[in-house]
Length: 126
Ligand SMILES: [Mg+2]
Image (cartoon, rainbow, N blue to C red; front, side, top):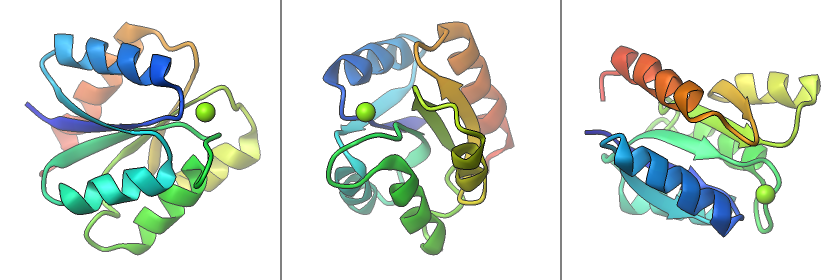
């Protein structure tokens, strides 16, 4: 099944989400900020089918990471799910403009997350 990258500075969130995704049959990779997320993508360029991304993180925040990915032809088509406590309409619009296909507010509901992934991956070629 698909490999999903989780980018969040909270280890608690990463572990919980990773466990939920693994239980649903996915493979996961983890990064603790945007820079690490970009590094992870570059070391696994053809593996990652979807990204979960927090907004507030040290080093590089989630929206900055999305902007970087959107400039990169190798990665711009990877769907991104924002998973954040942020609810600002401006941020959501900014995310949408750079590859964010779903905006999920923490704490997440497992059924919504898994349903969203299945729906998005069904549309993807990779
Ligand atoms: Mg955070």
